[in-house]
Length: 237
Image 1 (cartoon, rainbow, N blue to C red):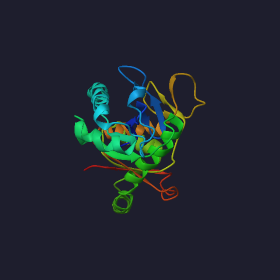
Image 2 (spheres, one colour):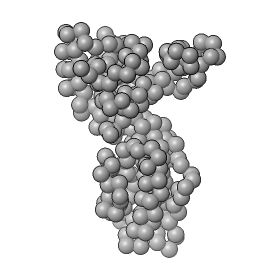
Image 3 (cartoon, rainbow, N blue to C red):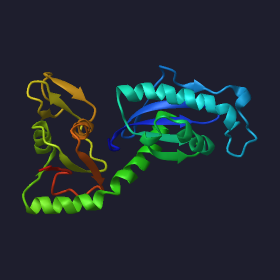
Image 4 (tube, helix red, strand yellow):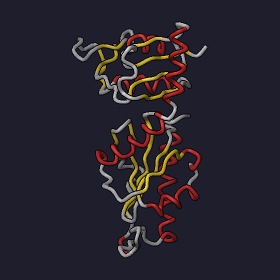
């Protein structure tokens, strides 16, 4: 399972532990099944340089968070990003049953609101995904020369719905409000008749479908796929 646009974020500091389900920069705070976890005031140490409190005393709360997160992971496995107080981020992987699923650690004292945290985390995710962009563009050039690719959202979606897996390349900020036709599963603009199911962002649905098939998704800088209408797909042979 590779890092994609759907992932989990566990935020922790000396006051609270929060859990988010994430789709790109949109974070949804989970307030059930043990989250959030409030840290008792007596464990909070404002004199600490890192505001991290007593790490030995906080370990049971980190273990509780890990147990709660594991329940979500079993139902829907996704990669995990941890964020918050540096000392806690150093301790958590050592006690976590999901340490091999942690793909990034973002230390800092920042506002853990979904909007603010979403910007911080998605920037890191984009950077990780973009590292493979140069090689993906080389693969695309070869596929174009061999005429073994499709481009444009409609043709990409059609190929994926045929059950094809492979490499999908798209621009960083490509978003497409739209709908999926419930009859033939085609993509439609938002102004089509109400025989469809509305979606906030069709692109996220396409990305998830590629990931579910075992394919790869790579983001590149905006403007690099103008000729391909911002998205391309190379089917695996």
